[in-house]
Length: 309
Image (cartoon, rainbow, N blue to C red; front, side, top):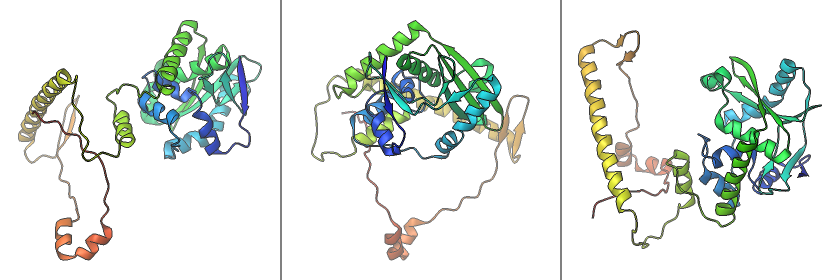
């Protein structure tokens, strides 16, 4: 059903390189278009380039550091025992699918995914809910390992602990496999970038992936007239809506006059004085050019503009 690849003693960089060889559980939600923090395009770049993206922000550190604590809270809440697997799994039937699971449940055909969330995300776990990209991650692990049950446990920082139980869903898992197969065979293997999805993540990937330009490069623009017409309509609608918003803001300001706060049962509005200090770079460049030169930094980026012919 699957092959086991040992991960004991594997460096973090080696582990990241290993993850490039297939679609992992944390990729599944993005491939399905359900991850608000990633995209198909980001997964494509990860799998088709030698670039290793190491995430080292506070949220990632907290998640790694508290993984064992979440596992212990799960054992305390359920009476079950869990253990590390120390392997990465690759499906033999679908070798593009890999799984690096957090824990396996002892004595049960099940696994456990450990999560942490900020208090601001508590509503995403309320009333039995599970963020959809985490749900796809668990079903992905079931598809790879064949296990019929997967638990997901989450410590909501400062708020509490919760866990959910997911049961094998043959229809959903088959759909997930086909989505991942189409992505792997239709995009990764062929080197064809997936269609943009309008996300900021996708914007970031395009700006980095196509960072360099040919200064004299120009191609004929074919097949975009209708989309560009629609783009112009959208910008016009946005401008009208922004004007309407500003008018409402101005009416409220006129109503508030010198008052800093206004409130009722539904809204609380603040119109307060804020002092801002900015460096006068124009003056510095004129009066202290040597200091300006020492602390100046040049960055390169591409500017996207659309003009009517």
